[in-house]
Length: 426
Image (cartoon, rainbow, N blue to C red; front, top):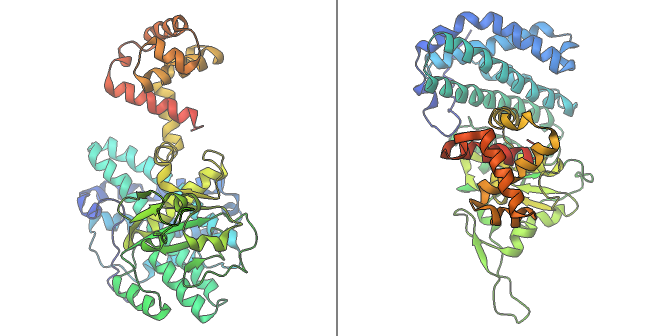
């Protein structure tokens, strides 16, 4: 098979993530590829019934195995030459464009596969004596790799739909897809931007749109990169488009106070409530605005915008017409990995499990307030609207249950995170 160099930029917060992994780790993990392939396939059949019913089951199994082998090749040699089938295989998984549910199934499959792969690889690594720091890097690499595969499938899905769009829409959709694909080269972005007549900004903000609102087919968003046709519609805006025009008060002179949004320029208080002016075209649709990021990290902004919108849909965040990611950082952090938080809360709050639910709830509320206020019984009592003597009694109970953990800073932090996560339903 003809070969070419397939440059794939590492994802995640560490630019040289792949180069930090010891090449010998691949040899430790490679013997388990066959068993891991079967385990992932079995889990997919269990979690996603659509996979169990697919007539092309052999293709799926081969795709899983190939993905694992390519991953280990990357670990062994981040700069290796890969054949040109590497990206096309996973782009093809996103091709059933007319079935908008197909891409969701593929994305779910990637997440399930990543979870199973990490669980088994971590176990193999621990048994082989691989250091914990290396296993943490391995986890980052697995999920960065899954992001790449997901992006390739998204590209395949968008490509299949492109034939249905007008020329200008198609060019801008191609640019949007490229911007949301972290592996796209700068040269490709420049070429697509010129063709789409959309100057590339230094930084961007993604906007996630609630797909359950009114039909988006008639929405006109001039000079905007938008994907309104997918199951998860979105926009990509230059950061400077968030800077609103001057807003005068009734007297006609004074501007509203401004807040600076992490280096993105002044945003008026009114603008932060209602969103950028372009969102007036989406007045009937709930939206969430991600963080301002460098152009190359556009996919990260969209991830957080969609995560913010999903928490609004779940009722965790207030149901505002426009929700800003940066207003809810602690909630997003606490809800970003529910299984991990549940496990942490179960361990950290195990002493409360010995009580009946009513007692446990009262002591949990007292403990959280005490940790948050760091005050004495009178202050805690005021927050809880109970008598100080009641608080003193509860604090004595908590001391008996948790012992020295209440005076250890690390344990106190863990307890507060666990209690806040439970309060959010995590």
